[in-house]
Image 1 (tube, helix red, strand yellow):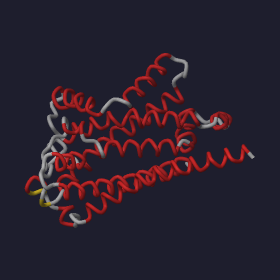
Image 2 (image 1 turned 180 degrees about the vertical axis):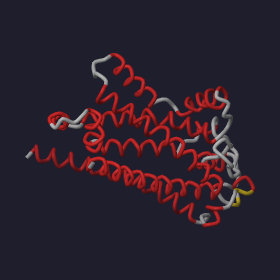
Image 3 (image 1 turned 180 degrees about the horizontal axis):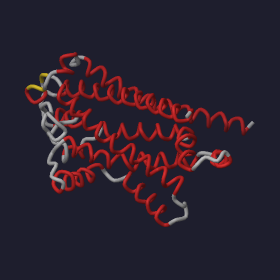
Image 4 (image 1 turned 120 degrees about the vertical axis):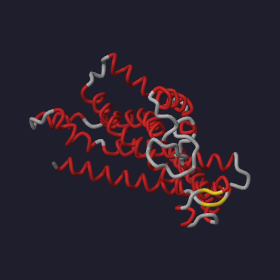
Length: 280
């Protein structure tokens, strides 16, 4: 009887905590939708900000955000996946370099974004001469995404059963072929989770971009122009612009929808890519 009672209480506790988490997330989302829909329109999406963002829209800001994300993901995802494969499949787990690399990745994953912003400003903006630009902001975000994505993919690859590796060896597959056609498809949930975490952190980043991509709210002509990301725009409207709360909520609603769309696209592209290489 006591065991049943304990089991029942434990299940109720877990369910209650899950409901609390979902309720908080729903509360935040509903608040953003209610506050933002009144200011949201098609013109808001395609026009430029007017009067410090109180009027007009966020067209140039959406373009700047997408360009920064494309740069960050283009750099971070292939590099992070390559490092994860090397650490999980080719480097000896007992080697000092592999252990040090794992510790470094864990430390970098926990470094505050403001530190990445200062690094990006010193290295990309000043040392490489990129100045305040979308390219500098995207490369800085790539540095932020890299440790999270790499560590997640590495853990996923290590979690794949050794029977899979022994099976590929028995079939005469090379190590590279086994990784490409068998192990990566098997580690799909970890690869997808790393992408989702990376996209979420990059899309919502504010502090690092203040020091790298800049504050300009006009339409960028190239990746070497300065541009304002959505998260920076929301921060500016909320903290520095009197009467900008409506536009800030509408911008936050666009940001949430953008994150959802990017995550869905990332899942579909990852599924299609892994399915193609698992059949090859």
